[in-house]
Amino acid sequence: MDSTPPTSKRIKTRVVRSGGRLEGWFSGDNELIWRYRFETCTKVINNPKVVSFDWLKSQKLDNVRRLLKDQFLKRFMEMKGNIYPDLIRIFYTNLRFEGKNLVSHVKGVDIEITHDVWAAVTGLKYAGLRINKGNIGVVEDFNKIQYYKSCLKNPQAQVRSCYVGGLKLDERVLVLIVTWILTPRGSNHSILTEEDLVYIYYIMKKIKIN
Image 1: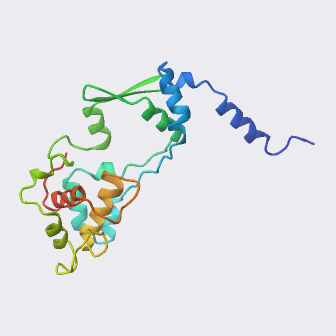
Image 2: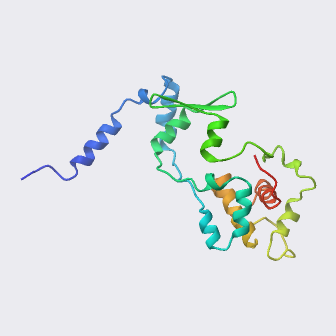
Image 3: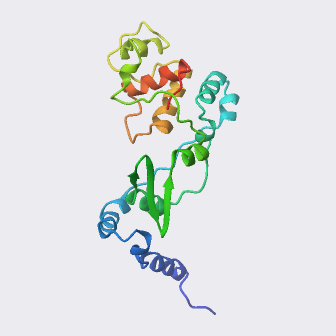
């Protein structure tokens, strides 16, 4: 009768994983190895959110579905696959820009993400207007509070802050997609920034976003 404790296999696996040489995962830069050991390895990797376009149709959100398809977001928003947190941490630890391309190194493999590669994988188009704090002014006469009130079920309501609650259904779904998928952030999903509202404005007006 085997007297090996039932947990021995799990213990052995841990030893093998933790005893590997980190140097083989990097491009020989000791500073990157230090950063991974004391910073990146503790980072929590959030599972990406996805939206099924068939689900939008089943919920009678056809207008939202059409607007997102107009922005070429279907493939990107429906992307699924296995997630490997350790490899993601290594990828971001080694990440750098070379010209306009993203370059990294993971376990002896050099990775270069060009515009063409990114477009082929995600289906996103490099066309349209960019949205960030530096160029919100490209939307002429855009007023954050006025536009927010136009998105409310009750446009006559008194407004002190721009909250998700009270938005019309289409706008509320689009806000969730913007803040959880397109420009995800770790917290404060209930309060809308000016950038969030510009995103919604562009999508609703069918203005192409880069």
